[in-house]
Image (cartoon, rainbow, N blue to C red; front, side, top):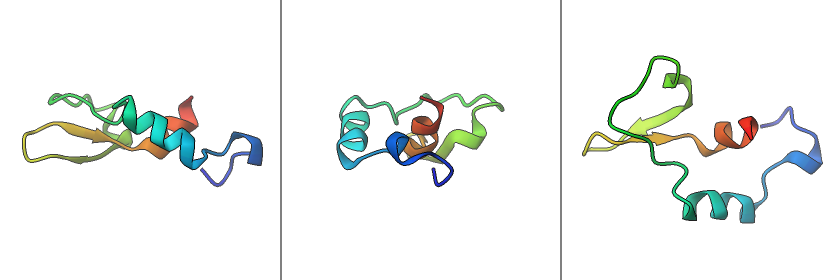
Length: 58
């Protein structure tokens, strides 16, 4: 996120809103094109999406 102009950088409130909307929760199936955006996989198999990379794409 360092390459973004200041006005587009995520604030703490932006991150809280993304988390409360559960936009970081993926599915148990992960497509090869989504792998760069996956932070890690939970014990139950659900993939956790990287919030920073999500913000860059918004």
